Length: 318
Ligand code: CP
Ligand code: NVA
Image (cartoon, rainbow, N blue to C red; front, side, top):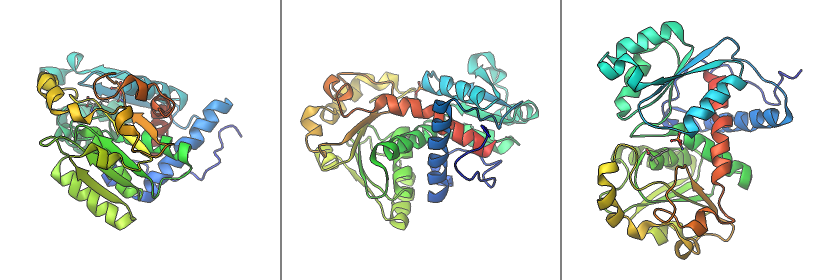
């Protein structure tokens, strides 16, 4: 009885990779959110749900992580399986073994592979060479696990997603990309405000605008933070220099100074707006202390939902 879910489990996602929200339909994304909400309820009720007994997830990390590593490892354990932490420095890929060979070898041992890396191409190649599902745990292009957890979090706080406005302020980076495509698929409006020269990827923007059109949403890019935040239900920001861009920190601080999320800016959002940040954050840089630690901030709900959203992904595809 404890193994039963209050939601009908779909079997058609089994074997799929989770590389980007772009590959998933609006119905699939809403299903993963609903499943995450249900798995969260079950965990909090102390009801075990272990469909992945005897299965192992390999987690390749080429960049640092707190949330992704811990939430995948704990999530796999809660689902009855086991997770292996594999640092690039200790793997032969660190010494030049081709990713295609690594993919084939790992597929002989593992039931799923999560990878956090630099070039998005590495995720694609790993998936192409693997016979087991591959999950993108962040690349320079996207961070779909975070975006799924974020939309679950907004859904829990607001009760629905369609028609809401999310303002993303700052760097047109991996986080911006996954939020854009997710919002577009879910029929939301997303307004992305970046300094000139730091806008989102053109292909991601085109795909987001097309998806927005199909699903009754909108995807707007501007260089005016105030315009983006105007009447927003959600205000989201991320670091100015992502992992791999540390050398640009100083020049970015100059370029981004008008894109700090502070009390001055958030007064243009709706009074009950939600403040979100994928974390780790730099207080006093991309966001003021008053905003990130204020009453509208839901950053730790987001962080918690990484666990539940990724359990939903793993339960569905593995
Ligand atoms: N938000 C996020 O992915 O956090 P980590 O870098 O700590 O995994
Ligand atoms: N944009 C950030 C997200 C970290 C979770 C980075 O890539 O470093």
